[in-house]
Image 1 (cartoon, rainbow, N blue to C red):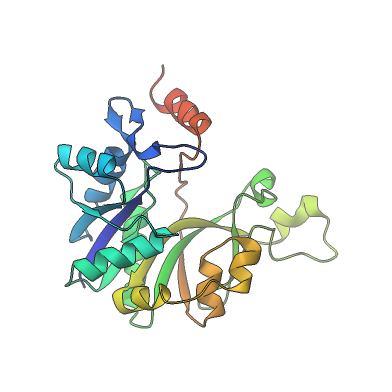
Image 2: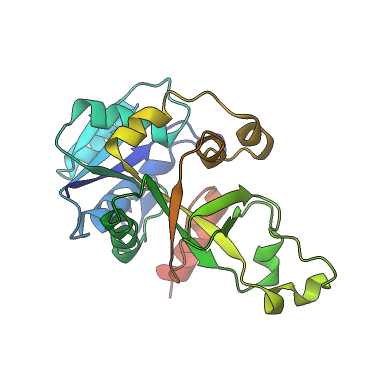
Length: 247
């Protein structure tokens, strides 16, 4: 099985323009992400997919692989699909967030391992929720799974709702999962996903993966205990610098 890792990277971010190019202790964020992903043994190839020449130039400067993609894409999934339309020979593509400079390669390996099961169409990671603050944070998508560990539904609300259980007891009464935003797709499935129209559930929750579920695709999940650190805002960057680089 040949697996390609794709890192979508946009310059135009509403909350943090130019985010992939910010400096993190002497390296751009996109370089840190690329180097972490490149160290993953299961990947036959790693590519940055961007619509911006400034990002492409920086990737080339550290000898990374980059493909310029359309600036019309609305999601990283669409950008990944364009990459695999230009590069053939892979069975699985893994879509890796370009704003997680400390992503653990073991998480990428875990997503790839889901495709050892031939029936897997799409794969993603989930993590048990251990803090009440996160459980009720609507910025952190939750997921419920079936007996085969496939996703049933994703929501920004806390799911499932525990009837007749006080909210302060929810964490001790049930295992809740949050979604970790890394995806793997079989290549033919990835191409199909890009032809789907925006669905009603997706519009309601602003979660792309609901479009796939609503159209009958199956999403295999795997449980990770590794925390992800995403940099979405300048404040996130300041927090990361204090945590990892300032003594």
